[in-house]
Length: 255
Image (cartoon, rainbow, N blue to C red):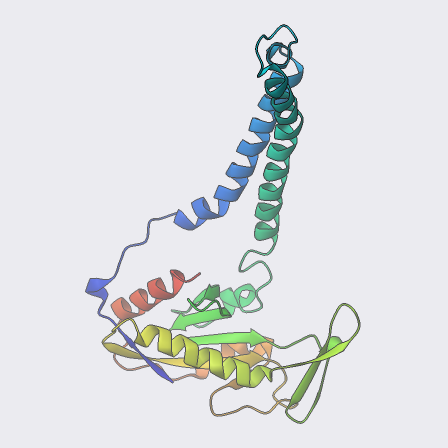
């Protein structure tokens, strides 16, 4: 598979540290909501504000309505703000635990990869499809998709099934075919960017090549063999350092 790549001179710079700022934003927002909840609770329970708003001394026909609204807001607002804060902080916590690269098989072996290779633990295409363990290097682009855990997977020929948490077996797409299609998705996305250089894309699944047959569009590589497999790929002619840096930036924008 091949994808065209635009000249580096037209690349768009990415602010340094922007990924960390985006990742920290939900935690900051969550902390802010909790602070607002605390301030609201303080105003309600430790100041005379509510007592004055709901005071029977308030004159006029609107007095009962104002009092009822004041009590309703006072009793619900701090709890609502606290819930929003907890939800935001919980989302930030789970995002941090599941951050790309936290348990990426190829990223853990980054130090063993051939010179000039860079790993992007996960990218997300505009159509929502996530592609893990993308390696950019002299060979072009390669990515590695994991197979289901052997204890929770079974197959008969081309038919694959996975056991879910409810202990039921359900059919899934053949992982080798899925990886090949993901390679096509990545190729089509980069083609849509009107790029002028063509770079190879290699799709692979992490598994035992003796048990799973490769296809024309996807290879099968054991996790420990990834460095040697990448080193055996031929370097792509015309892939200059500038072009290599640019394609890395393009894919990093999808991380």
